[in-house]
Amino acid sequence: MRKYFEFEQLGTNYRKETIGGITTFLSMAYILAVNPAMLSLAGVDGVPDSMRMDINAVFVATCLAAFVGTLIMGVYARYPIALAPGMGLNAFFAFAVVLGMGIPWQTGLTGVLVSGVLFVILTASGLREYVINSIPMEMKMAVSAGIGFFIAFVGLQGAGIIVADQNTLVSVGDFHDSSVLLAVFGIVLTVVLMAKRVPAAIFIGMIMTAIAGLIFGLLPMPEAIVSKVPSIAPTFGAAFEAFRNPTEIFNLQFLVVVLTFLFVDFFDTAGTLVGVASQANLIKDNKLPRAGRALVSDSIATITGAIFGTSTTTSYVESTAGVAAGARSGFASVVTAFLFLLAIFFSPLIVMFTSEVTAPALIIVGALMASNLSRIEWSRFEIAVPAFLTVLLMPLTYSIATGIAIGFIFYPITLMMAGKKKQVNPVMWVLAIIFVLYFIFIL
Image 1 (cartoon, rainbow, N blue to C red):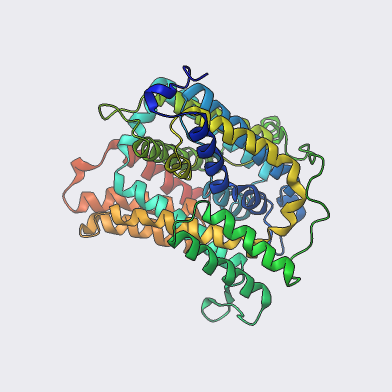
Image 2: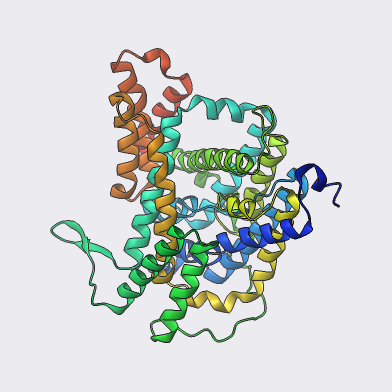
């Protein structure tokens, strides 16, 4: 095993890899509470039960998707990178696809499944690199930052810190409300932990917030700590139901959903791979060894997650925490994977992770994603406008897809008007046309 994972070449050992794997798990364990809450639309009032995914089934699906994806990444690609249902993608699934477009969550899972299959095909054919290179870096960064703003807005809204207002659309919530104060406590605590660079700060912040909520009687007390695994039946295999009715998937609306899942996963995965590999000094001659295996691992994880019943599974940048703790090989991912599998027995604890408790995680992750704004050339007006509209309109329209669509429509137009038509890749024109059709026939 030491030889397979190249311990000697990488200067690592079982102890370092195990500590690194545990650190990565703790750094991203918040997804086990956030993802079920997000996909079940917890904290969103006035939504019929048919639009909500079963929270316990999603919890199991999240654990299994993370286990399978991370294990494949560790054993096949041999990278210290963990996978789980992605933040941002789950928000798009819940709030844009299900709530915004009114698409049944079962059909949404079909979109995730199809995007995963396309990901495999594109990776195998080499088209993936072509598509990625066709989209300018500024727009990639704008999409990532915009999703960060959207996630943060969802967190603030769920916590009651931002509320609806008839006169100004939104306003500050009631800071005399104990639930709001609990969320504020969690945000402040998590920010302090992050600023002090405490490992697993987001996870620790959620745990401490949940404990405070239990002490002051603001959260329901779990009936147990460990229990039998909840049934995954409500979500397992639901991704195949839409194939029985072709009209649900052979339409422009479904195409937009698939393209959005595919697009965001494309760049989230690429950025994470490069970032983690760079920190671990795994890049050789400006190339990423076994990059194809890593991308295949990611796409298989997405397909597996869709079958289990969760939104797109992708590589997590929190893996850098494990690398910082010593992880260098895929063995660390194997450790992380089995911790996700073990977590499946702790489902009773999920009742503590209400929207007030998960809000700090959403807001902090949003802040981290917003850092990509620094990589946009704001001094170039033709770049600034589409990037700005992409970022701004995601939270204002409560739709990630709408933000991407408007930004991608304006990008070729502003560059053409600036006399830089030749700088626009034909792929961007194709995407712009697709999104114009999206506004004409769907919205």
